Image (cartoon, rainbow, N blue to C red; front, top):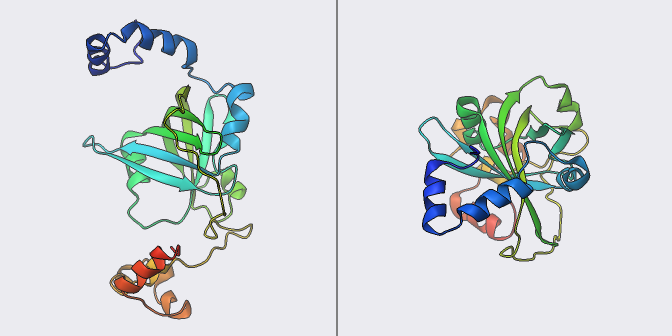
Length: 219
């Protein structure tokens, strides 16, 4: 008997008479390696994905990870990697990885549509040689693939990509200063490199102004 499913998942499968189907699906589509011919180009072509992690208390979180195409690199059939760009300082995802290492990745093409799921074990490497691949990254997260499988896309609404985020670091690792770092309520709590920078970027703003910027599409 495979250990892919948990006891709770098995119980629900039995209740809904889907245990045979679940076993057949696992046999047909789930692998512990990336099929480079089937999935390699799709993974390497994504410019965003969703990352789920869980902390030591069992509390999950999900975050959006965006960049240029190739933000999720396929190093080999067993290993993926992605950059850690500047964030909000909460370090929920990386902290959870440091604590439990277990991650889930959801990759979606909203135009086709198509989606792929990856389950893995992750580690954060501050001095990874791959840093040069993603200018502006602070560290690299490497993911050992534990399971990968395509997922039915029938409920995925089709969306058309209209623009690239201007906040993705350029080839020199530079990016526009985000509006939220100019919030007056955060000014004295920002990390050292951001202290005083708001003045050079147009001055402090309050929450109503920030809300207006968000409504206009400015992060």
